[in-house]
Each structure stands twice: as C-alpha cells, then as structure tokens.
Amino acid sequence: MIIGKSLEIKPQKFDNKEIKGVEKRVLIGKNLGAPNFVMRLFTVAPGGHSPKHSHDWEHEVYILSGTATVVTPDGDRIAETGSFVYVPGNVVHQFRNDSKEALKFICVIPEYAEE
Image 1 (tube, rainbow, N blue to C red):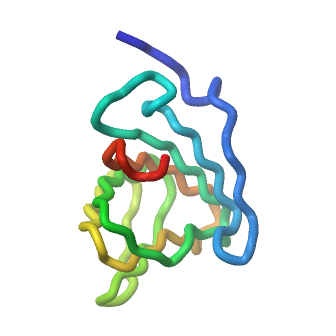
Image 2 (cartoon, rainbow, N blue to C red):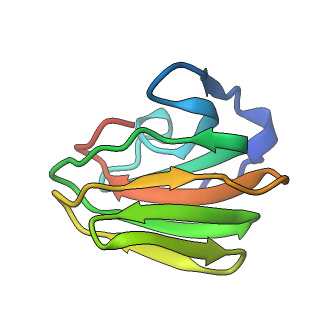
C-alpha cells in the first residue's frame, strides 16, 4: 500500500494554443506500478482549458473545487464542486474554466491510455 500527497508530485504545466493554464499531476499510475488505472489531478487556471479532443478510452472525472464548463457534442454543461462527469470513449470533450477561481478535478483513465 502507498499513501502520498498530491502537492509532493511535480506538475506538468501546459500553456499553449490547444491547452491553456493547465497543471497535471499523475497521482497513481505507472509511477507506482498500478496495473489497471491512472489517477490524475488537474488544476485549471481561470480562463484555462484542456484540449477539445476525443480518444478511445473513457474518463471518470470528479470536480474537487471550482466550476467546469464541460464542452460536449450536445452543448456546454456546468459541473460544480462535488459533481462527477463520465466521458465515454470516442466522445469529443473539453474542460474549460470560465470562472474566476481555480478548477481542480480528479480524472481516472485506463492504464493503456496516455498518462
């Protein structure tokens, strides 16, 4: 068993045309030898966003703090603190922070997906 602290993991920072104001920390994954899933913590700055994209694997997302605008094929949806979001494989999606406070969420994906 392993117990860790998220702030002890150095974040990857993204700030370009496709991804703006995003920090990603891989909490559990290949780094700990997890055989099935990868758990990541994302922090999105106000005005920031993930890329608008799709892929074969699903996401399970839990909003820890802040408010996410979730871009879906059916239009934008709001996910606030305490909300969960299930994104099936091959569905175009994006997480945007249109608020004035940081957005933090946990995202779990299968181990074969990119961490």
